[in-house]
Image (cartoon, rainbow, N blue to C red; front, side, top):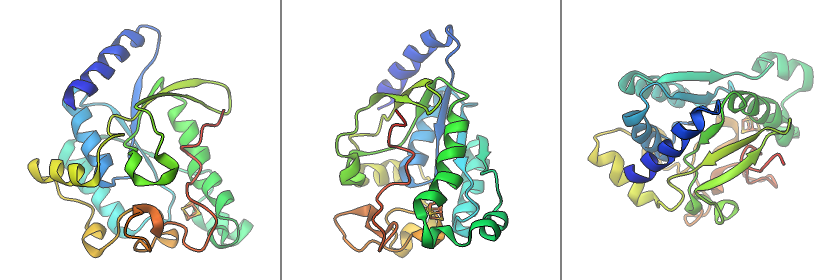
Length: 221
Ligand code: SF4
């Protein structure tokens, strides 16, 4: 795996001459922590972009801070235009009435603005996570709404959850404590429960809604 990361970074070093630069997004799920750990071996200062929606579990914020301190991360918290209070005052509880709009305001907009500063975007997406990710490729092009095209790199595409857990154990890295309580995919607290289908780790996300993804990993192009 380190070879794959090194190869990607070597390609990117070539690209750096063209003004391309590198970031990784992290929601501090186990695979995000694995990828970040791998990347900081080569790039200790790589910007680690975290979408601070304001709706995360307290455990997620505490764990983010713990890992950021432990790895000495260059953590970048991406914030929506409005605070939770401002959004709820203006539009009500969107995660109940219009979750796509809520994700657009609190995740997609700030994320696209954040990654738009870079040329290469590392993600910890894995094919096993969801049927919507089954065809994920390690290297893809991603077009932002403004037209800029990023190189999107997902080195863990072929990893399964056992492999992820094994890596964390071997490197003595703790997991987000919610995983020990039965969660298998953790997003914003109001939209996350324990999985309904043991074979689909993301089946605890947006339960009761016709929604499988927040919209970030669907190409804007
Ligand atoms: S996951 Fe839920 S709370 Fe978070 S931004 Fe999307 S709809 Fe809103």
